[in-house]
Amino acid sequence: MPTVTLTSDPVNPAVGQDITLTVSVSQTNGSTAGFYLTTANPAPGAFKAIESGTDATDTQVMHTMPRTGTGGTTTFKAKWTASQATGVEFDVYAISANGDRTNRGDGAGSSKLQLLIGCTGGTYYIDQDGDGYGSTDPAYAPRKDCSVPPGYAAMTGDCDDFRAAVHPGAVEQCDLKDNDCDGNVDEDVVDQPYCEDHDGDGYGVMGGQTKVDCKPSAGFGDCTGDCDDHDANVHPGAAESCDGRDNNCDGKIDEGVRMVCGVGLCARYAAACTASCTPGAPFAETCNGYDDDCDGVVDNGSNEQLCGAANVPCVQGHCAGSEPGTGGSTSGGGSAVVGGSAVTGPGQSGATGLAPSSNSGGCSFGAAVSARGWMWVGAALMAAALAFRRRATRR
Image 1: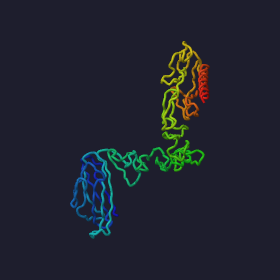
Image 2 (image 1 turned 45 degrees about the vertical axis):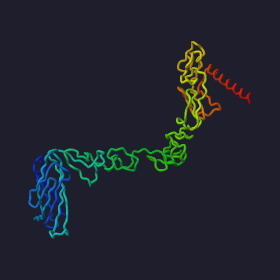
Image 3 (image 1 turned 90 degrees about the vertical axis):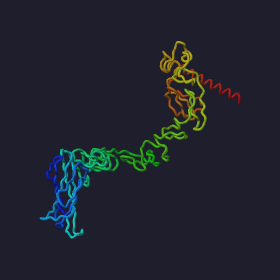
Image 4 (image 1 turned 30 degrees about the vertical axis):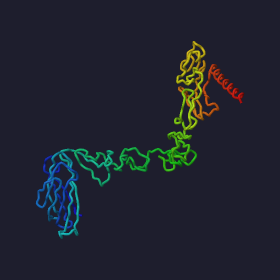
C-alpha cells in the first residue's frame, strides 16, 4: 500500500476563499499514480480542476490519465471553495502503479482531511440510536462541523450505539449488559427472591423452590402467591370472571361480576352466574345508617319509627342524644348474604364473603347493638320462630 497524504493551503480558510488541495502518493509500486477526491458528506462548496489530466464536478475531482512523478512522490492538485460557513471532510483514494497496464504489482491507499471554514465549530460523534451519546467504535470517525450535524452527538462514550437505553449515565438494568458503559455488568441492581412458577404467569407459589435474582427467570415468578399455579389465567391481579372460581386470588369468588338484584339490605347475588336473582325481604327501617326497608333511601321514616320517640331525631345513623351504638342505632357493618357471598349496602363497612346462612334474608352486624337494637333483633328472631312453628304445624 502506498502512503497517501492530503493537505490544504491555507490551513484555516475563509468562506469564499479558494482552497488548494494537494494529493501526494508515494511511489511504492512505481512512479505512476492516479487519484479520486471527494467530500465525505454533502457540503456547501464546489471543486475545480486546475491541472491538465484532471477533471472536476462540484462534488468530485479525479485524474483523466495516469501521472508519472519524480523524487519518490507523485502529486495532484485541485481547488475547492466554500459558499458558506461549514465543516468539511475531504476523502482521497489513490493508487501507486508500476505502469505495465495491468493491476499486477499495483497498490491502493487513502487519506482524509477535515477543515472548519468560517466558524470555530467542534468535533461530533456518530449517534445511531439518538440517545445523545456518540459511538466509541473506531469504524465511525468523528466529524468536525460548525454545529451538531443530524445523526451526530456532541458527547461520546456510547458502548452500544444501537440501543438508546445504553449510554454513559444510563440506569443499570438487570439484563447482563453494561447499560451505563462503565465496564461493569448489572451492578447496583436489586436482587430479590423469586418463587417457583409452573404455569408461567409470572406469579409463583410459596413453599416451593426459590431463586434469588434481579428479575424473574424461566420457571420463577413473583412470590405474592398464585392460588392456582397450573392455570396461567389465575393469579393475583387477574380479571375476575363469573365462573365459580377465585380468578384474582383475593379469597373471593365471582365478586363484582355475578348478577346483583335489590337495593339496601335486600341486595343479593344470584346463586350462580346464569341463575336468576331474587332480592331479599325488607326489614322495618331503623336508625342505623342502612336501607333496611330496601326503598333506596337510608334511615327514612318518622323519629318515632326510627328512634322510638317523636323528639329523638335520627342523625347520621344514630339517634340524637344517645351514645354511639345506643338509641336503636347499630354502628357495625352489615352484609346481605347469599350463596357464600355478601353484598354490602350503602354506607356499610361489614366484611364480605361470609358463610351462607339457611335463611337467604339473613343479616350480619359486626358491632355493638343498642338495647333497642337488641329488641329489634329479638323481635325478628321471634317472628322467625313463629313462622317455623306454623310450617311445622302444617306438616
